Structure formats: structure tokens, C-alpha cells
Image (tube, rainbow, N blue to C red; front, side):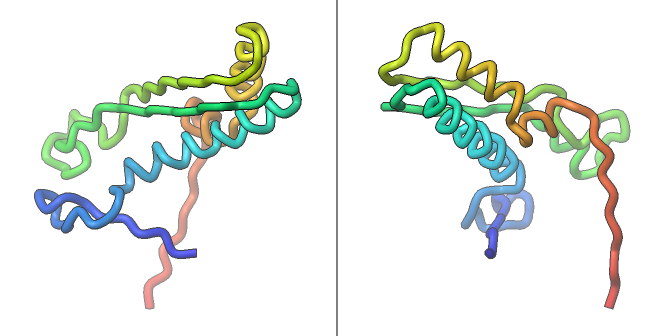
Length: 122
């Protein structure tokens, strides 16, 4: 699999593909989407519509190393889920709670996790 990422011209790209932050949000949304589909099926609910919109403010001064007081990441990520189907309000609330409790990508973004990496040159 090849995943293409780009940046706008102001950051040295040509805006030909999603930027890494958009891919991060897409991964979060895709993971929660899978959770909604699975949890809805378990509830016997047919989904007609599922839309997840995710936003966050990233201060580029941190990313570009222009201000050591500004972190290179988000303070907060917000998402809104619009869902429609043949379930009751109570079923949709249960589905939502299952997704919140079991989405790996949501968990990884909402909790501190250890990240290790190696660099191999040559």
C-alpha cells in the first residue's frame, strides 16, 4: 500500500494530496466508522448515514520550530458525528459509547502512549 501525503505550497508542497494532519483525522474517522458499523450491526440497527467531521487547531510556529514555547501538536481535537438509521435514540447512544470505549485510534489519540522509533541511515 502506498499512502500519498503532501503539503500546501506555503510549506513546500504542491497540495496534491492530504497533508499528514488530514491523514491523522482520516485515520481517526475511519476507525470510528468501522466501530459504528460493527456496533450498529450488533444492535440490529441499519445505518443510513454516518458522517464524522474532525477539526483541530495546529499552530505552525511549533511545527516549524519558530517558537520553542509552542508545541508542534494539537491541544484539542474535536469531532462531530452525524448518524441516521432505523435505531432508537437509546440504541444510538449505546453504539456511540461502544465506539468511544473500543476505537483503537480514538484511544491512541486520547491517551498518553509510548512511541519509539529507530532511524536507519544508508
